[in-house]
Figure 1: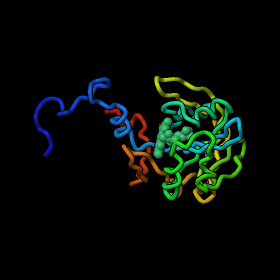
Figure 2: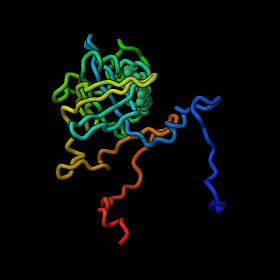
Figure 3: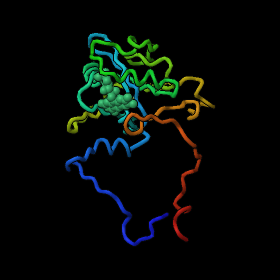
Figure 4: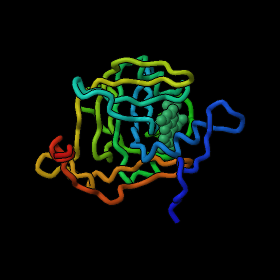
Length: 209
Ligand SMILES: Cc1cc2nc3c(=O)[nH]c(=O)nc-3n(C[C@H](O)[C@H](O)[C@H](O)COP(=O)(O)O)c2cc1C
């Protein structure tokens, strides 16, 4: 039954810092679905690294910049800062188990891809390899980092975008073929649902008169 009482809708208010309020848990359960950057990098010692990051987005159009956030100081962040390069690999649905396995915190001396038998191949431009089975990869050099509390935003200047031929239709990426996984709250993962193709309105389509 819709709530017909006058006044604001009934809501529970949670304030960060209040006892028992885990803002991180609420945010990650509300800001979703989040695309997943499966970030490959290499340490100065040459050891490869692969780890998912769902705090991920496009940060700028021109120049093309993407961003992911390291919550805490992790191996990926250390590698990217030390070498100035990384690759964001798209995770398709078939890669769920593999991707999840790479989130185990195994330490900088362990190459997750080698450990788990995930095939890597050379990237087009940067030194870290890309995930061979990933439908698309974004090769980046480090643009900058921004410290925010316990987290660090990593901004990557896009140097190359490589897209598997099978997900391309007339030069465009077909979302269904990309079949990207997303992160939901807790331990949940998602897949694409319905897709609506609706043109963006012009001002005269929405203004009165
Ligand atoms: C789907 C998924 C998304 C994740 N997103 C993030 C994220 O956005 N930021 C982060 O710091 N850790 C994230 N994690 C946890 C890291 O993947 C995990 O801490 C990993 O061990 C880091 O690896 P590294 O130390 O080799 O960089 C995520 C884990 C999963 C499974």
